[in-house]
Amino acid sequence: MNKKKDIRALTKEQLRNFFVAEGDKAFRGNQVYEWLWIKNAYSFEEMTNLSKETRQMLLDNFVINHIEVDKMQRSNDGTVKNAIKLHDGLIVESVLIPTDSRTTACVSSQVGCTLDCKFCATARLKKMRNLNPDEIYDQVAAINKESLLYYHHKLSNIVFMGMGEPLMNYNNVLKAIEKITSPEGLGMSPTRITVSTSGVPKMIKKLADDEVKFNLAVSLHSAIDEIRTKIMPFNATFPLQDLKEALQYWYTKTNRRITYEYVVWDGINDDKESINALVKFCKHVPCKVNLIEYNPIDDDEFQQASAKSINNYISNLEMNDIIVNVRRSRGKDIDAACGQLANKS
Image 1 (spheres, one colour):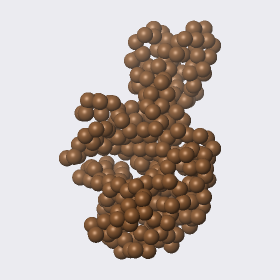
Image 2 (cartoon, helix red, strand yellow; image 1 turned 60 degrees about the vertical axis):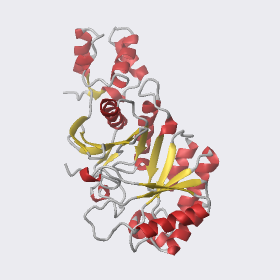
Image 3 (cartoon, helix red, strand yellow; image 1 turned 120 degrees about the horizontal axis):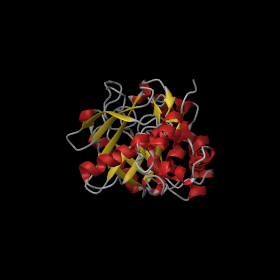
Image 4 (cartoon, one colour; image 1 turned 180 degrees about the vertical axis):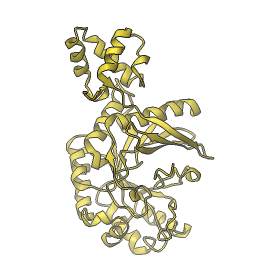
């Protein structure tokens, strides 16, 4: 018995060709494509402008491997966390983060993670597989519906800061973004999308060569190799010098500044040397720094630094004309905050 093909793996042209080969009109492919991507159909039965025979023919040949929101939790602060069941039963998590003026989707790119950041709950899961483009797209579509339902406006922004390292699933992430930004998809502006990486120099350069239009953020956390390798062991393979050169290449090609995500921990990177190293690193390429509140993951090794330490960072960065923002975490009561996504459900 032949295994049915996932219909969303086909391009519009391939769909058109399929219908022609079946003795039908090519424009049927356009209709099906619209149902799959703009209308986000979960089944062939929903495709009501197709005949029953056509829908049965699609059912005989294809499947729609749609995600399912297995469990939804709402935080006291309005944050929504989705446990997303994939077609093979695996689970990833995605988050809707509301503010007064916008809603942001935080989406996952892998089941588990390929990297080994010690402060991140996701890194404790083994990497099981990459997400397909349609599975990434579906997370965004689901959160867009929740944004409309709960906050009465479309999704404003997307950040690839959920489970997984996006640049280790490069092709699928870019295909998903292409669909998300397409008029034949969700039609979102690429300038409202940020891909966050832990820092894979070769792939950052590839992003620049591919002339992507979205924004780039780097999960930095220390500008001293010894400290960064301690908290992010893969830094031994991708040291800061290589990362710096890749980011300079990115800026030369794109003329767009980098965002550095940076958590300050008590006794790890809250000293003057760490502050000075970050200031120096920030001068290599135009950037801004987001100081992120740490969210505990039942680990005594990492504790939130004092307000005084955070303020020392802020004053030193501002003194050197570096833009700095403090990001307060959302959704901590439902384990939806930065670094907490780990499929506890």
